[in-house]
Length: 328
Image 1: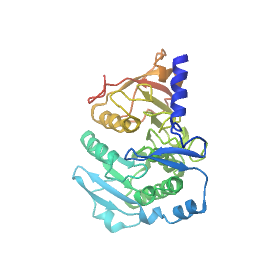
Image 2: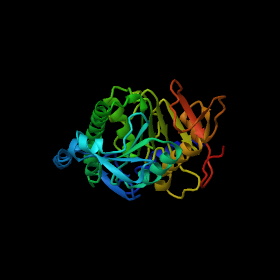
Image 3: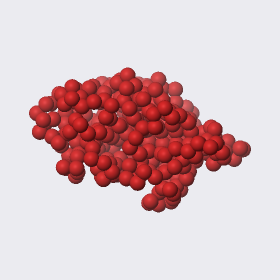
Image 4: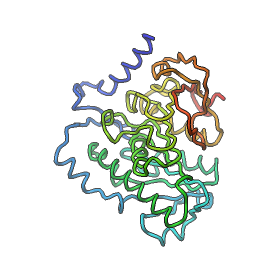
């Protein structure tokens, strides 16, 4: 148990481990390219001004991919019925929406890995949200504020899309990584928690511990969090109905740095929708999940297509160092 506590303490301390980040005001935050930026968490007028310039209703672009157009997207815009009517969107099929993180876009790692995996695993509508107009700013506090307004705009887009096509809210699955892993919860909250399935991949830690907009279990009918760099770049504590801590949730096997670990959940999720692998064993607490001291009788599949509605708990999954990552 002492070893587990030491791991947790190390993870918490790692966020501010570099010399300049010696107070809660200053923290290093890693962007989607693995570059660490020293962030001043005291709001300034410039932070508010930067955030005010972003209008997600008009600037967010929703890139539709289907098996009929697996590699070239059909862009959709909120309220543009002409684009929608000329697209391959099929309201009778499941729709998966992907939300990227800070300083990346729809062509980044989340989209490049998940879009082909989803289309291989199922005949679905895949919508990659590009909110880079709000996420690309170097001003992290502005990006955090934009995360909230973008989440509200995505919820409004879903409502419009359903109204225009007859699609049902019950057919949606939303997946987000890093700062997008926080935004998916905001989307769900703006839809009154009625989305059936939200997956948050290592949701960003910095600035979100006491943030009222941070991801929580009630944001959808079923919420799942996959922690892969817990306490460093991603949140440490359980946040969903079900929380998975692969390999203990802090450092992923086969990774040599935090950037790799933070991103590894994308690959686990992609593999899960193709193979259905990754069986987790139930743990009594997140500390035992980190230490590997899990002796409860329950087991559960991580990721995959279907929500585990009605299930809650903490689970550990051990993986291989390289693909296929699943040991099942």
